[in-house]
Amino acid sequence: MTSVPDDLERLWTPHRMAYIKEDRAGDHDEPTGCPFCRAPGLPEEDSLVVARGTLVYAVLNLYPYNPGHLMVVPYRHIADYTDLTDGETAEVASFTQAAMRTVRKVSGAHGFNLGMNQGAVAGAGIAAHLHQHIVPRWGGDTNFMPVVGRTKVLPQLLTDTRKLLAEAWPA
Image (cartoon, rainbow, N blue to C red; front, side, top):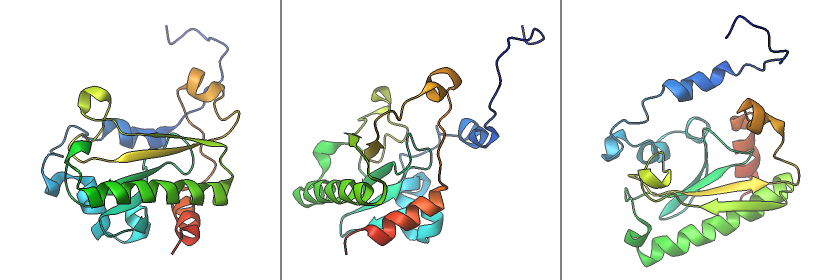
């Protein structure tokens, strides 16, 4: 019952409503409806692209699990890891290494979670366009907020994080 006080203090995060209300079931199957296909054509400040390679790019996650949560994304609109060319596979790997080194340099991350969710049933929010997550981790970074409040507290704006990482990314 909402009218009975439960002695809990509430931390409201109304900015998350944009994510909740977003039509994530949109037509990501087509490049024109895919945010990963659109991002490279936008200015870095708008797209949150940190670094660009020949076949892939690194971009901050708009809804990060932790500060500095990056994704490595091929420019080519493909869904499955087995469809990557040898060149794309190599550049995904080298960009993942560069992302880890850069995040360590900028923020002193203690560890990382790396991964790809292949298909909607595996948890991919945008299953039609392959992307690898690089999530920095620190000792004690999981506290009561995500467990009790289902809220992540991020200490830095995404645009500030993008600038730090882009400036530190190896040339």
